[in-house]
Amino acid sequence: MRAERPGEDDGGIIDGFPTGGAAEAMSSGCLLITSNPERDHRIMRPGVDLLERPPTPEAFAEAVRYALADPERAAGIAASGAARVRERMDARHGVRQRLGLIGLAC
Image (tube, rainbow, N blue to C red; front, side):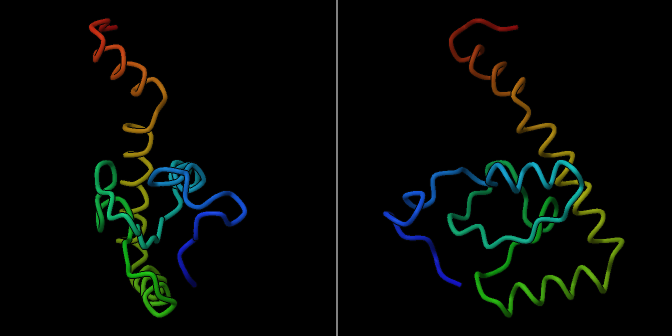
């Protein structure tokens, strides 16, 4: 495992956090286990909406073991993440926010 480098296939990391694929999976109730390399906590809260671990195979394995050992807690985190994605990453939310910034509240 290693970080992407600019110039590789898609030109490096171009998606925000969580990525579109991760947000879509989360919205359907999947538990996100991520390293969150940029430490972007503007939308998602570690330990509440997702599991955030260092970018190592050992840390990922530990997170999977954690989820398997406490499925109720893991399901709660996944449910919180799903709700957060639906609440904060819905396109209508973004439109309302942008319209508000230019003085056109809806």
